[in-house]
Image (cartoon, rainbow, N blue to C red; front, side, top):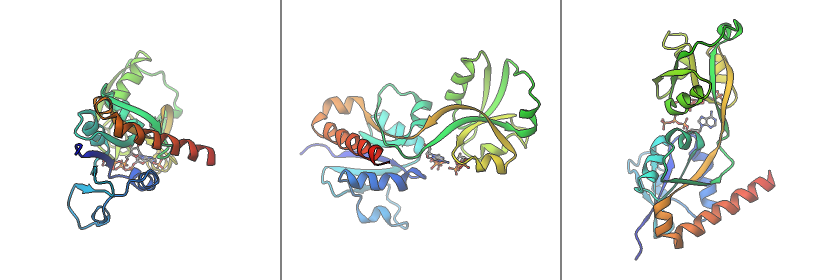
Length: 221
Ligand SMILES: Nc1ncnc2c1ncn2[C@@H]1O[C@H](COP(=O)(O)OP(=O)(O)OP(=O)(O)O)[C@@H](O)[C@H]1O
Ligand SMILES: O=P(O)(O)OC[C@H]1O[C@H](OP(=O)(O)OP(=O)(O)O)[C@H](O)[C@@H]1O
């Protein structure tokens, strides 16, 4: 019997959109997965050869990149931040749309001052942020936060932030404006490259099923 395939999904907001997609490709987590009282982190599925793990978004990429999970679903923001060479992201699943942007207090953005060559930025994405500003000849000193980046400017932690924006509501409610879009974000299927080589017989058809479904959903949209 072949090894059990591990499918990693993020426990945050992407999960609600990911579950119907998984179901469409024939993967259904066991009933306990949906029980909020259940503290297990690994669950069976309707496929005897596959288990599902539910972890934090950034950890989905880490589990798959190291081959601890062979396949998963995660936002492209996370893939770009880590830039793991062992991660293959073959399918844009066309949900979880948002963008990664630079924002700053509305009054400071309006003042139109020239940007200094060294800036401080609060973000969950220090690698993307450094790379982005480096391309403009600006050295970005990043203060790593794991959430609530929007608080940083008003509390004097940094003038700028780099964070995800969807409706813009969080920025607005915290007195910030979006000044630059770094990149568009959507959910992706990710596969461990070594696992794909070793177990193409199972991972190949799975990838094709996700690819076909994504194409079908794009056509229907
Ligand atoms: N406002 C948003 N609109 C659409 N997609 C988003 C939005 N915020 C985050 N995402 C996507 O969902 C993913 C997970 O975001 P979520 O907010 O669930 O993470 P989180 O719960 O803050 O993360 P953590 O697991 O570190 O607690 C992000 O990596 C991104 O791809
Ligand atoms: O533009 P909007 O529609 O307001 O969405 C953007 C917000 O959504 C995400 O936060 P989330 O709600 O996931 O909370 P977090 O701070 O825990 O990441 C993101 O970090 C922004 O704060």
